[in-house]
Length: 486
Image 1 (cartoon, one colour):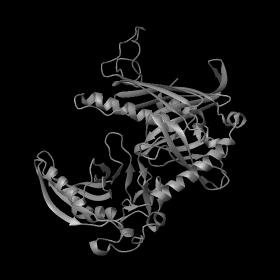
Image 2 (cartoon, rainbow, N blue to C red):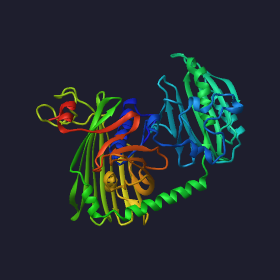
Image 3 (cartoon, one colour):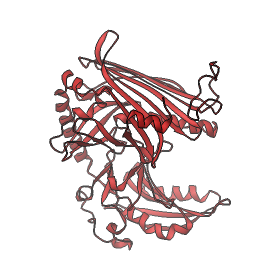
Image 4 (cartoon, rainbow, N blue to C red):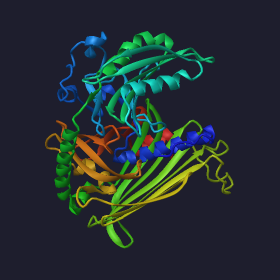
C-alpha cells in the first residue's frame, strides 16, 4: 500500500495506514499477510534441519563456536523463518513474535514482550561492494548522527559466511538511553542482509548474546533447489486447478458467514461474507461479497468488496472500496459512522477522511486493474499465465476446493490486491484427524505464511492475521450484542 509522505499530518498518515490495514484484512479472506505470528504457531517456518542441511553449517544443537555465545537451542526457537525470495533463513528468539510491517521496508520484524526489536533488511547497491566497504559506510553514517556513539565492533559469522556486528549507544534527552546494533552479511556482491537490534540500554547485556545468536543462525538455501521446488509446486497446483469445475465451485458456496475481528482479545471489527450464483454483464457465474469494518479509538474504516467469476472461468470482475473516517460523537450510538445528522440531512465528509478503491477485469488472459487513492489513479495491464492462474472467487472457496487426503505443497499464480500485481502464491496443506484442513498460505514470495483452519465441510473456523489479529466465526445474535447492531 501507499506510504505516508513527510509533509502529511500524523492524523492523515495514521488514517492511511489504517486503510492499508483494512485492505489487508479484507483480502485476508484470501490469505493476506501483514502480520504478527507467534513462534508457537510456527507460521512462515521451515524445519531447522531443512534450512541448515544444505549449507553444512553447525547443527541446531551445537554451541556457538568461535563467537563464544550461547548454544542456539538455548535461546532460539526450533523453527526457522524462511524468506523464499533469497532463500534466507534465521531462527527467532524463544517466546518472540514475528511481524511483516507495511510502514517500513523491513523484510521481518521480531519483537519481545519487554520492548526490544530485531529487524531484517535486504539492502541493494548499484555497484559491487565488499563487506568492509559496507561496514565503513554504515559506521560513517551512524557516527555522524548526534547523540550516537560507537561502542563495539566484532566479527560474528553466520553459517559459512563472513559477518560483522557494530553497536551504537544512543543518548536520548527525553527518554532513557538505548542501543542500536547492526549485523551485516553479504548475499551477493550487490546485496547485503542487515539484522538490526533496538533495545533499551538496561536490557542490552541480556539481549546482546541473543541478537548475535540470531545472526549466527542465518543461513542461505540453494537458489537452484528453490527454483526446482517452485516448479514442482506449480505443477501440482496446475494439476489441481484442472480438476476444479463449475460443479465443484457451486458446491463450495456458503450463503453467509459472519466473523469477529479480534486483536489481543479485544473486538476491533467485524466482517460479513456472502457467496452465491449471480449474473454480471448478462453472464451467469458466481459472486462473493465482503463487508467489513475496523474500529479503533475514535476512527473507523469501512469496506465493500465484490468478486465475480463467469461460469466458464474465463471472465472476472471485482471491486474493492474502502473509506477511513472519524466517528461522529454527535450521532446516536458511539459506533455510528459519519453519514447524516439526526434530522436526516447529509453530512460532508470530514477533512481527514481517506478513500481508496480498486476495480479489476480479466477477460481470457488479459488483466486490467485501476487503483485510485490519495496519491492519484494508477492503471495497470498484464497477461495472466496460460496455466496455473487462480481467480479471486476461487481464493475465497479454497477451504472446500483444496485436496485434504494427505500433506501437500502446491503453487499457482493469482492477482494479489495488497501488492497490486500478479504473484506466485503457495499453499501448504496439513489434513486434520477430524476431517478438517489447516492451510498455510503465502500470498507472494515476499510475504510470510498465514494459517487458516477449515472444518470438514470447508467452512472457515479460524484465520490468523497481522499483529495477533484473528478472524473468528460468529453468529448474528452474538455479533449484534458485541457491536450494538440491529
